[in-house]
Image (cartoon, rainbow, N blue to C red; front, side, top):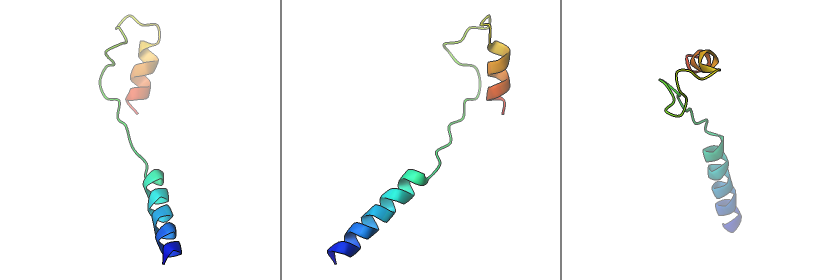
Length: 48
């Protein structure tokens, strides 16, 4: 019974860590000004 609990706990933990979390970076970053040298690249990458 103890082994079953350990296996189930580890399985649940593994599933929770493997769930992909998506972070969307839409809009403009507050710490990057419009005159930043890489503004075009940042806009391009955030539009994907």
